[in-house]
Image 1 (spheres, rainbow, N blue to C red):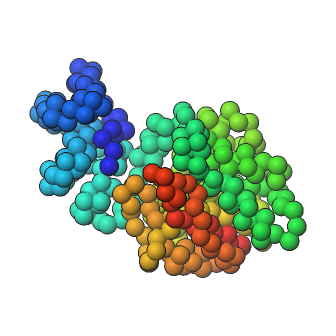
Image 2 (cartoon, rainbow, N blue to C red; image 1 turned 180 degrees about the vertical axis):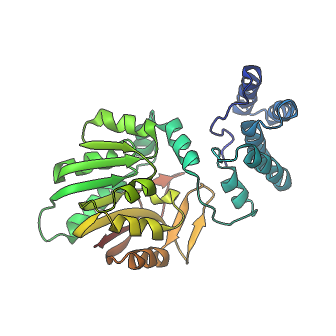
Image 3 (cartoon, rainbow, N blue to C red; image 1 turned 90 degrees about the vertical axis):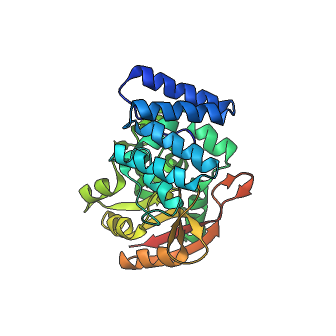
Length: 306
């Protein structure tokens, strides 16, 4: 659990500066001093969601489960749209719904915060290769060279998927909830169109569009239930069009929220979502799109057709 939440101001510049002092103490490993400052902050500003959240993260790190639950609960009450993702941390502590949905506000702020330098962190440090795996899987399934009319890149991020597929299509559209990510994608100059939107909203508004390929590389780790989004994707695919994506694999059934605050989906859940969307499953193969702490993360690459 991170000790540095996405920042939501107290509304008081002095208190915000004191919050930064707490983070500096944490960076130096002085947990006691950081805790003291955070407790002083919430006494002075009981609705300071970020301070409550940071206190919850510190308490969780120290093994104080009950204290962490109180702090995360207070953060959730103070931040009704859950920009910080306190509900996810409560779920990891066994409180409330086991696999809650992530708010669009949380995902947006998460990626806005990390947009600058994202490619370096993902590719160089985590050996991320999601778009390349999707591309290689499609090539293996194809009868000949890959070529698409229109490609939709869901959760396009900084444009790594667009860069991998640009030469394979006539038109390339990217969609992401994070404006910061879209700015980075624009700099790559590979998309014909880029849109800042929540994915489900964009797909609903685009129903009837006819894309030949929809890709989503490491995007659905932030989506709990694949059923609704698979059905929405089917509504924007041309007949015979392909839907290709990656997920983190759950060796079991259903969906779980992992300690990383990313969802893992079982192959059973994937298969059920594709079937309910009226699509034909082409493959569900085991892959790893990234490494964490030096270990490959178990995942799945999935291809389905309309």
